[in-house]
Image (cartoon, rainbow over all chains, first blue to last red; front, side, top):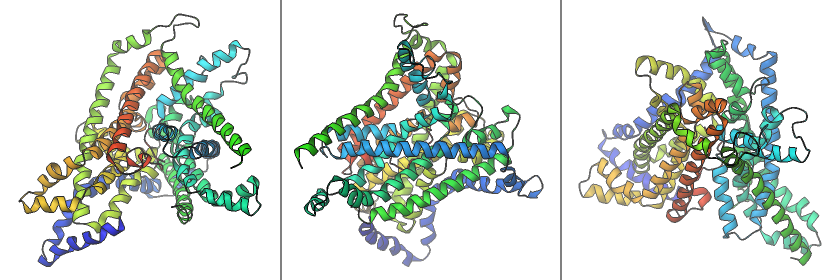
Length: 299
Length: 278
């Protein structure tokens, strides 16, 4: 792409010799830039500015309001769910990716799994919540089946609509995402490295501990961060699944945004949204750094 | 590889793939099972939940609205994005990075944050312009931008945009002709990819519609679920199948057309942090 860019640069500059044609170029990109400005950048600015705006001028009250018990709880719940589902998803996804990567690279299995993961990684929202309600909800298929065999998975309450249930449901899109992100890293591993380890007298443990492990670690950590951000931003699945109490941050935001609950508070919603942006930005920056490190040897 | 290790690897692969397959297939199967279940356990199989779909006019209206949104979003996305991408390639290569960054930005901004920022914009539009569900298309174009950009970028990289446009221009074609009658037909596969992805995303979208108080398909399914779980699950199964079919068609096109690996061609690329579906 870089190589192809060079000749383009020349063509782009040629008309400049005419002098007055230069501004016309920019008009071509203007509709897109205006559109993105209005519907992507303006909302972001509204969130950032709104978080610091009060009825009469700038204020920090929205930010200081974040220091309330239930807001802190929402952030803690969100962080817990995101971490748990990211770690579970990353481990399970890495195992699945390894199972696929050790097979035939052009085989049917690999094609099916990567296509399925592409679809499932996008799966979510109401449909996903319903799928789990139909599976292990109080009248779900697996739940009834187990109940017939004297096993009550909800003996201690219906945890599906609580935080643990959310973690389980989130892994449904986290694992496929992990497979998609981690498979290229596993493909970068060469069989020669294993042979080299063996020729030096190392066993399976040595290989994973000193060769493959350290090489895959940045990719694995990066993917886990991506999964974290993915779970942290999710709203629709939680909204469809969680009934009330213990809201996570996106649900808390939606409660402050809609006036139905009578607690509409756009300023606080914007402050919470800003908090989410800050956390996602930190995580994605770390992800980008790890990504850069991974790409050093991954070709 | 020693024989013992090969055996161990094979056992590991079988176990992981079987467990994975079960985890991903059972919930989908359970939805089918649930939607054909009678009113009490042990009742015979019935298609009641499916046949009652047509007795909910609100639901049919929501299906129609969501299909309309999908169509408007796809057209608007192509009209907005394709000329810009071609133009940037030909005339403003300096802007390519910026455009790419802007297009991928919605992946990192959580959908809920965008909704918070967009709600004043939508309130203004509803008061000063016209209050219709189709206003959602404005936000949906932003939502599909990353996926559409990747699909179109793969298509544009596979053809020689510069030669095609110079040839057309030298024969007296205007820019409109170059874009929509010369370049677009040469990347029909990528265009189809971008449109199918947009349709799949819009049909599954819940966050924007729910929080901006519009009743699209997913919001209607959700509300119906509180009253009639069987029917709402039947509709979810139907919409899911529809999206799957779209994505399967897409993955075939991705493979046939582009020289890139299928997982990179058109399918939603990893990094879907803010994906509107969730």
